[in-house]
Length: 250
Image (tube, rainbow, N blue to C red):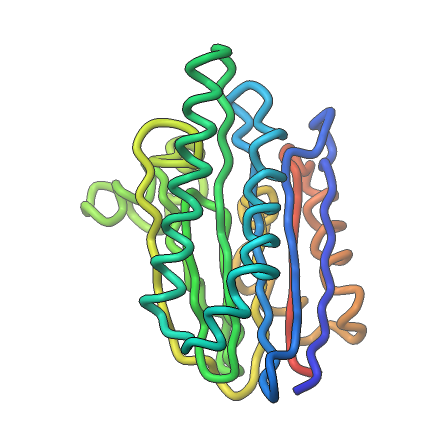
């Protein structure tokens, strides 16, 4: 299975620094190719948020290198992956909270990560970065935004159409390093065709699903897809950092 990976990260048009971090790893385990993608957005409302997101990315990279080979050898299942990820994220969350308590500096980051095997997609979500799947029929948002606005939509107090303009869409219900953290895990069947896209809210807040789908599916040069998405965001002001990671079969 040949895979094409493209990615981009940028501080945007107005932010002085880039608090987003990402990783993308692809390795062969016997006859199977396994890929892992992660996007972490340092929470802008917390001091030194840029220190939390690369720390989370390093945790996933180390997990991929050290723990995944053992998991594959013993039998990769959703329960095993999610237990391992939960333990890893709890350890990082506790460390960040402890650091904040000692220094008075709060560190926070969102986490959206995806593990792709031959047959399945394993994902974990904390915060409002996003995971999209192009399954050949359309663009599906696999992750769910953990924001106050989304909670209002689910409660029927806010229409889905008002979600993109409601100020509460920027208020996180949870993140790593602050308050109570409960990762949401999900396993879905991997489609035969299609692509996956992970992005920070600096992109998804400025482009709707159809615009993202058009660039992912209909772009002439796939290697420039993420750059085109970034250019659209910048042309619309890009008030936040922008990160996008796209993986698709060639």
